[in-house]
Length: 115
Length: 115
Image 1 (cartoon, rainbow over the protein chains, first blue to last red):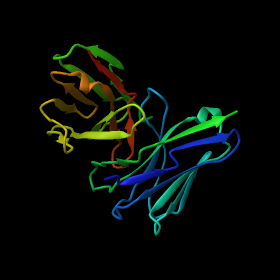
Image 2: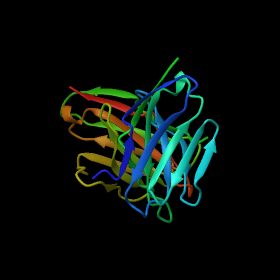
Image 3: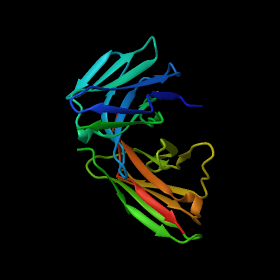
Image 4: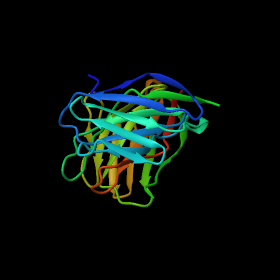
């Protein structure tokens, strides 16, 4: 059972455009929502994460929007660059006290930024 | 900061042999580390959660006698694939949880090919 669902599966964006990737989750106990970027043959890199007490978080060109009532969150990549071409994974977890933060990952979105 | 390394980055072994993969947190102490497996163009599958000084917790369907995990110190966890077979060929990635932040930082991955 997929706990976190991503859409679209792949995305092609023009350089300078905005890339938007969406995620939906089922478990209302989830309280931590990170986005990871992965290049081929490399491990995922943490981009940005959000908790349900805020609706938006911005770090540089990356913004997370969070809608608790709809159980959805999205990643916006502003001014997309060819170097942003990668696979993006959303994840979610219920953070227990003391650690052991087991993440549930989405299937991933491949983003291609064309010059 | 928050750098995680893995060694080796790739390994080829013969069927029936065992392979050990190391995961180190270089600039922080990690009470909890995680081991994932990733097939080409697929998401990350959590195999086990490793806590320093205690036995690992394996996800359903993961053979604990085949995938031995040891977390001997706050900066080192190892995964040993015992009696490897071609179906064990995959990309193995570890992550380390940084303190109470719940943020997980991933290693660069180890490509295992069993011939």
